[in-house]
Length: 265
Image (cartoon, rainbow, N blue to C red; front, side, top):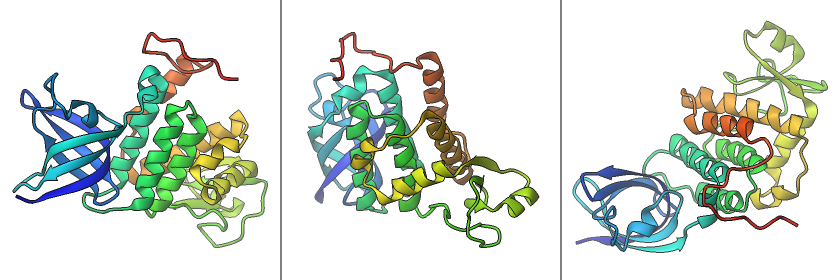
């Protein structure tokens, strides 16, 4: 019997038969991996708390013929504050969906793991919009899809205009001449580009110090989402739901716990 340990975050879980669950983990040691948690759906299961989506835990796994199974699980961080607010919970589901979409099984990436863990801490603290935009940008970099931000992706000319053009299919920016010949481009301000460059220079936890106007955040959202969906070749369901939440509750999140949150100073 071969046993091994993983420090992992649960990306998603689904029921398998009556009491078992299939868990998708992202660990610092092995990257993304599907495992089975036998009996985890039972109310008295010791594994139950650690195999919920977005939990961070240390797992002891048994190597199986087709799929490995969780023998023991020690919860390290439940991120309980994610579960008191629908916007926070959906944002956590979004970063998990992106991590799942941009990673293959058995490809460890310690930088990706650290990025995901930091993002969950920030989201649980209510730092949502800028955390998501920076997470998207940094994830693209770690996955090998960082867009070209300094020169035109069409002709290589340095970009100097105040207005910036972006072509998601080329994975980068265009000069005015190349943009005029392209079939579908997005236009945004140079200030938005500078914010995007800051995302790559600063650590994720430091970005809470950054003050970004709402108009630039909307441009970043549109730009990064278009580029991500082009590379994943699908629409992101959690991103759609987040957008609907913003429209229905423009002033903040939606409490789903019944508990009153402390006011921010």
